Length: 362
Image 1: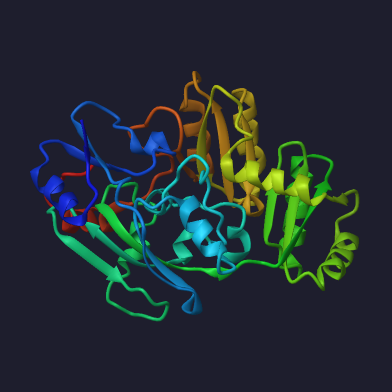
Image 2: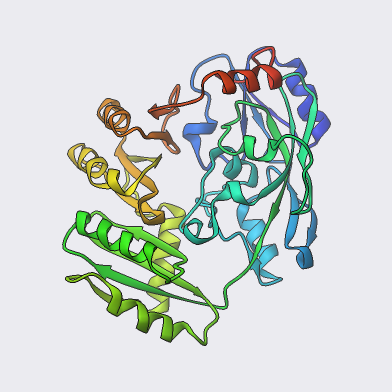
């Protein structure tokens, strides 16, 4: 069953009157998280709860309703030379602001600027009792009690239905340049990434590909760009080579990363926390299943394309061995996260306070 709401009071009424477990949905760009995992789940469609409520370019903040498409926000920010620097993924697929926060999805730009968690400063949501709860505010400097905005990042609709969010933004860089760096193999690429992250290069993005290539993006003012590149290339480890990509080719590559256009047909997309040390063993498990992957934020996150018909048990086991966790974004929904899932007593207490009657999914 799907119930739609276009106003906050409608959301509250739906939550109070629901007879089954509740699962919020925005644009549906991440169906593994927004589709009901079993019968008896009521989908709360908030895609109609959209629009920018307040935007102050001088203060670098905005407030928008949770169902507002990321693409719509990006266009409004671009008019003032600003952007969300964490590159929210799947914008072209209809990703919404609330969905990006609930799924904790951040793109390549999170390497330098931080992820979505670092930009959310305020939230309003309807909890399991139908109460409208507010946390944070519309300004960057506030200390309004418990940090509820951060709590909602990655909540996957299990704590409440987000209806409004406030975020800070950054000025859009005036120029960017992308280097394709070739290393001997993926293990060598991890070493190159470690070297680059330890240096003074202020990379905007750094992605690792299984064939040993790295995509390094620099962004900022155009005047020093050539000098920055000239200093970086000689500092690469022995055996690594670099070429600067034409602007059109670089734009296409980063667009494919944001849209997950690199994921082959017939595969489902998962996102996993990662570490540089885990990149190679995780890739070995993905390759053994016939999947594909790319590693963002210099190896801090893994984007995994897993064959739709393949069992997820091998991936789950590998993630557990590595102490990592993953969530499926596309494909059929999973009953729970994969890998080494944490939570414990604190998570139980939070859920008990916000959803005492267990209206949302576990």
